[in-house]
Amino acid sequence: MALAIRHDADLSALSTFRLPARARELIELTAPEQLADLPDSDLPVLILGGGSNTVFLDDWPGRILLNRIAGLHVERLDADHSLVHVGAGESWHQLVLRCMSQGLHGLENLVLIPGSVGAAPIQNIGAYGIELSDVLEAVTAWDWQRRETVALSTADCRLSYRDSRFKSSDHDRFLILSVCLRLSHHFEPKIGYDSLAAELGKRHLASPSPRQLAATVMRLRRHRLPDPARLPNAGSFFKNPVLPRELAEPLLEEFPRMPHWPMGDGRVKLAAGWMIERLGFRGYRIGDAGVYQHHALVLVNHGQATPGQLLDLVEHICKAVDDEYGIALEPEPCLTPGPLLIY
Ligand code: EPU
Image (cartoon, rainbow, N blue to C red; front, side, top):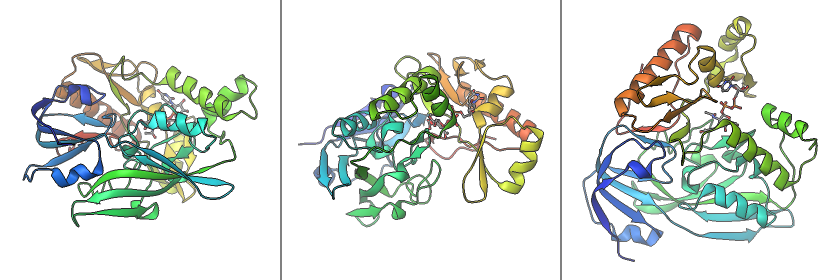
């Protein structure tokens, strides 16, 4: 199908934080073959999926490729596992539901995460004790450097907590075409995450079915996190800081109530939401940029937030957290254009 190029395109509805921004060119890709038809250009290129992890701080001076590549194919591996090959432009949440309806397990805890499938490996999405790295088998991507399609194993993707080579060292190198997940025919619920265990306990679901587990995760998410369709946001705005044990221990002695999780590699992850809430930021606003009333790790756009208001809010939170805990918070979504030194 011929490629349509939109010029001076409005981006506000393409990012769930909904700051006003425009792009010089916007092109929607629905199939990998269309890459061959892309007109040559020297413009900088940005790939956009569901827009739930990209916050536009300004107009994008180049080309945006909207990744809408569809498709889902299940390949039975053996009695216990299947591989699920999914187009990068599919909705992540719909994928989770479709896999569950086909008796394929492993994604239940990741239900209701906004965004597209292709974005999942970029930031190694995770929730309630599961990360994409637990189920990812491979990624197929277009390599702009080698100008060919490449297959990357999970190890090649260098996934870590909310990070990957796609987000760091090879930031502009790949366009993810499809993702392959290894899912199980047998359901083994992962229910150790504190708030999930508590919610299941409240409902006397010691051994939940896949549907019960997914429904419980959805209830938790709906209760704690704002729906981007009603209150624009980009999910967690900061990563949880990960510190070597020797640096985490004195902090945990000083703040014994701070939630934390040992990472299994000698490092400890600390709850940034707790730190920010404790400093009194829940519900705090600068103009229309605010801290979500029910979860301090989430920043929201109350309607007409400007990039300046958002940056002021971010700087204010980062400074307060640094003053109190000696920790430099890192934003979790991609703030674009350009690298941003906040604090
Ligand atoms: N907490 C507070 N106050 C707050 C927010 C959190 O005290 O205002 C405490 C909670 O009570 C809990 C701890 O902090 O003890 C952790 O909170 P929560 O379980 O909500 O998770 P999180 O660490 O804030 C991470 C992910 C979320 C994911 C949840 C659940 C990151 C950056 N965020 O948030 O992912 O849904 O765990 O697994 O790791 C996202 O990436 O956009 C996202 C929403």
